[in-house]
Amino acid sequence: MLELRNITKIYNPGTITEMCLFDSFDLVVGDGEFLSIVGSNGSGKTSLLNIICGSIPIEQGEVLIGGDNIAKMQDYKRYNKIGRVYQNPAMGTCPHLTILENMSLADNKGKTFGLTSGINKSRRKFYQEQLAILGLGLENKLDIKVGLLSGGQRQALALIMSTLTPIEFLILDEHTAALDPNTAEIIMQLTDKVVKEKKLTAMMVTHNLRYAAEYGNRLIMMNSGEIVLDRAGQDKLETSIDELLQLFNKISIECGN
Amino acid sequence: MNNLLDLLISTLTQGLVYALLSYGVYITYKILDFPDLTVDGSFPLGAAVTAVMMTSGFNAWLTLPASLLAGALAGLITGIIHVRFKVRDLLAGIITMTALFSINLQIAGSNLIVDRNTATIFTSPVVEKILGSTSLITRKLVVSLIIVLLAKVVLDLYFKTKSGLLLRAVGDNSVLVTSLAKDKGTVKIIGLVISNALVALSGSIVCHEQRAFSSTMGTGQVVFGLATVIIGATLFQKFDIIKGTTAALIGSIAYKAVMQLAISLGLPANLLKLITAVLFLAILIFGNYQKKNAGRIIQKGSSHA
Image (cartoon, rainbow over all chains, first blue to last red; front, side, top):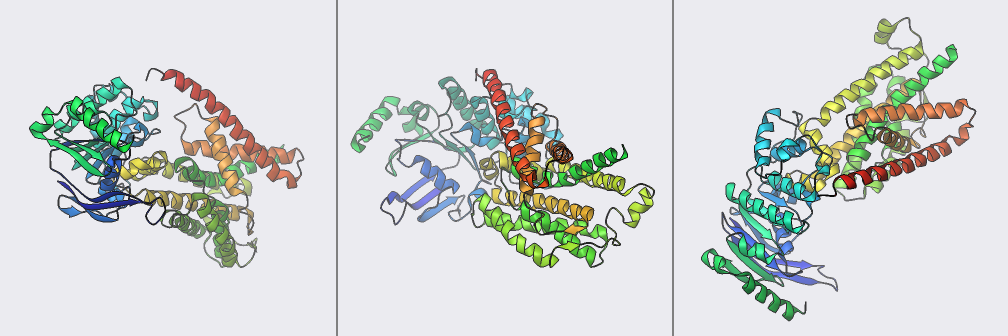
């Protein structure tokens, strides 16, 4: 379970451009939830993910994973429990390493990177099985460099890599935004499949209201650092894209966007 | 004829000895994407440590691990300045390099000459026993070759370990290293330590070879290292199977050969650095030109994506 308690986040504190984004912000994400987060630019969606992952500091508050407060923990240590897929497909993989080397790196997450062989040949079959889930034929290209793959293929690989080892949370940071509509659809379906098959707790920020409505079992809409809509379970299922769009437009007009 | 052969052997030896420096620069520049200027200080550091130990009567072979250690320490300092104190990569290197200039003089006392009667690694009893009847320049070649190949094998093996894989990953995409729950700063420091250890080892062997340490012997070494790594990479761009260390080794030999040729053709020594700069620039331009062509092919090939 992830809990954000009483979070205060101020950008450029003490300067003329000081901007308070979150003021005693609270959010609880239960185990097994697949939470979609929507909202206009500047509403705090990505800041929220960055606060959880420790990419940006906070002024006040607690970030609890499984009851442990990680608000002061350095970013890289938090990733022991968190997997993350970024908007930019280049962020989740190493272009000059082969698919096999990339998978080996991901496979060793949370363990020591010592002087034993970087690639465990006996795991090859396991990697192929994992890549086969994607249905993109990557399982037959283990020895080619990732830089030669398309953006969609790289993002699919990044998704598999980030969920290869047991994690408590999967963070999806607009992970389909840089892809063409067809590829985005494929990645979205894969994401759903992976989350269900591995029974993950996931948080997905997206600008695609249809994805937010169709996928996941909970949905929140944010505006100026506040949650303006929170639907889960049956309520979420009954939420239509039109309803979301109406609310979204209403907020946008109020904000002058 | 004999003179020409001698010249060829000594040029090859030069290329080999300096290849250790190229390996170091290969790690920082090519793998870590870190332009490390510490090299200009850690190279003479190895020589200073070696010269002092030799003049104080230590066994010649002991100078090699001592230089490695000293260089590693220099890399560690640059790493800490950059990673922990968040000083930009170029500046972190400049700071250590500047400090090392004085430190090297402190270690050596002044410019040092190693006495003719002192055994170097090339004239040590072990080598004498094995290669006894051969000339000094042949011995220099053989000993250098063994050390350089040994270093290459160890490095190549290291790059295949988990730690080595992580090192390659951090230069390629440091965000991924963070996602793997590893501190990218620590990985960078490890790379700088290994790199400068090799550079100091190179300085140590040059000191054995020349029987001298001079405080200015580091000047321009980083440019040399960069040039050799880029020559190697440019020459073997199309051959994926050629390892980076091999490319750096051949780059180093090619560079020393071109320089020797220029001197043999009567180039005044005062112009050497100018030639270095021109050669370096020419390689960079040539490399960019090649990359542009290669880029076009890749773009065409993946346009469906």
